[in-house]
View (cartoon, rainbow, N blue to C red):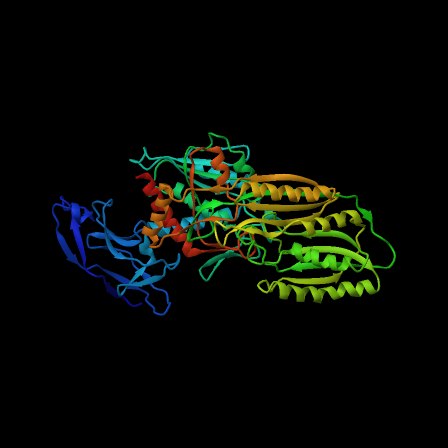
Length: 593
């Protein structure tokens, strides 16, 4: 073991009148005593070139070094008055949550000196780990709601839980800030469960790789589990400055927004809301598209499978990128719906065949990444034609969707099923899929580069007495959304189907010049050194319902960088979690001032 002594740069200390506490405002100091001194500390177990270094954390002379989460700087705190501090030296970024060092001013500083900041960030990750051991698919959030209520009870904080299992937990203001305007932190507790054969009993196996958190074989649940973990960490902390605080967590945000739509008028007091459900780290989301989720069912009476010389095949499409059917809708990804329609249309145009089963898509709010179809064709030439479609489809996929190279088609023989879909029901499905617009319908003229209106077919499943189809229509223009949704419903109804509106959420747009949004933007600038973009996003947020329920409410949506939500490739960048955490803490303080 080698001991090193690192010498920091000399620091000017500005003493206040009693010369016992440390101040930073030289302009208002009547007596300025300038003290030049050096701070030294010991490094142990030193190794260079990414080798581990552990730094002892000691009181130096009369001061304690800490990392100050507001100013993102190392500070020295006077032992007799811990409310006062002096900026010691700038700290230019966090590596990660481990005990690694940053080279600064020719000295090494251990992450242990991040003090309270890192401890609380670590708590965010701990809470997220706890959440990921509680299965929470949409419509099944009871256990998460129980967890939130128990969390509040442990902290002795008042809470309310409504019939939809939405939970709001209230926390008193920091002493001295009781007169501040109440602020609410908004999240949802459900997640889109992709890659889970049994979502109600499958915990998430998260891991860290190259600065990103991912999940093995499933969606991660960072949407919106990370934001919820931050809000709970705020409730748990006694170190932060904030006014009266509410943490509201809704249910079924991902598949109908029934939680937000059913909130009572008195469930929430705060009229300034920080929504932690954004996925673009460098933006403040100030608007979101409206959405209409519809379920369509084509009725049918299954028929016995034909006898005689027939061959049975299973057609699989696998490896699609999938993704969020709002934010990823314009990225040119292959939907398994399009691929399924193409191959069935090719076979249908040449030969007589029967479809016995269709199981397509993972979630109503996702671009379908997989499909499984079982069909039978007459033996002979038709069989050879079906088998030849595998190579043709894979070539077509490579040519049409070069950015989705892992999506493949496979055709294999399979066991005979007892019954098949009647011809009229199958033809009704194919006709509807041919007529219904999918993907980007219209780009915005007012917001260049932004999708204005879109539609996505999320799932197609053969049920006992019907073929189920879900469509998710989005638009920033409520009238356009309503018109397109009606057009889709009319198409299915004309084919003999029933159509049901499961969810219709209004579009939402904040005034980007409001004092609240400007304060949020200024906080990014002061804490992180850059100003975020203010954008409206082509996904639906619960904000539209909150604006309807609570007149005068203002909402700013922020969050860490989450890539590929609603897919098995979902991941969140760790550094952006730490940065958004700092912004959140400072923003709460400024809103209380």
